[in-house]
Length: 365
Ligand SMILES: *Cc1c(COP(=O)(O)O)cnc(C)c1O
Image (cartoon, rainbow, N blue to C red; front, side, top):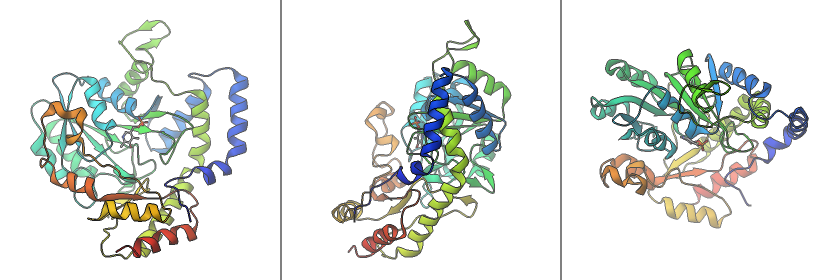
């Protein structure tokens, strides 16, 4: 059996006619940037996130950058970022000129450890970026409480958590503003690059909308030195079709995750845990083992593709050499990076495929 790490096929087959008809419709309208589709998607996605405003943009990195920049964060400022994340979280901070200050992971949930955030706060700290990694929300009550005490902004990186819940509240509605990515492989993915900011802050929303569109609030009137980061009509149109199906598609990921959790019983494997406050949307199903590299090779030889999210924590990335951090600074994030392995999980994965992955993992010695 050959099991790819991810497959769009079953998802896209279901909506193929709708996507192709929509393409024709947008194509015939001859209006490709900032039109009706973007406007409607923004309304629908804001509602999906139980939030007031959504601003479409080019990708998830831009979404985070636009939030930070619109809060006036830049050179001389510091922003708290988890050490175990995708590099976009840290790069968004760097792009503003501010410094990312990394914080250790929580050892069981793999998100930022809220109990270690206060140690990292200085008089330069302006914001905390909480990443809802792998599809599970960070412990937002604790993070918001610290932010309130020190008067910091809380920014969610929800790129892996469309539809995830924290105490029955939606990811994207849990801080001051949230960045989403619609990279094709995310739970809600465009057919190309796309992203969005979600917030209840009207002033922030207006500023982001302007900065993302060359700093312009009116055609040829530029109030900021903005950038060009807009959501295309065609991607918004595709995203609207996918958004209607997202809850159902996320539920199918839950089905697969439950099967994995029930079935995997190899004592060498640590299975992922759903926090009691969380509804996990399983963007990734991440197991842990001391024999990670051997297991990955073993699975590869049995036709099962896996990936590592992520092999190098932020503080050890070459790109962040200038921060003079070293091996041993964040031992838990380092251990995670050596032990995690993401198993195949995608909409409509067959029971026989899931069982094959389970049996193969259980037979690993
Ligand atoms: C995918 C991702 C991003 C970046 O999104 P892009 O659309 O690729 O720019 C940011 N943060 C996390 C946690 C991600 O997984």
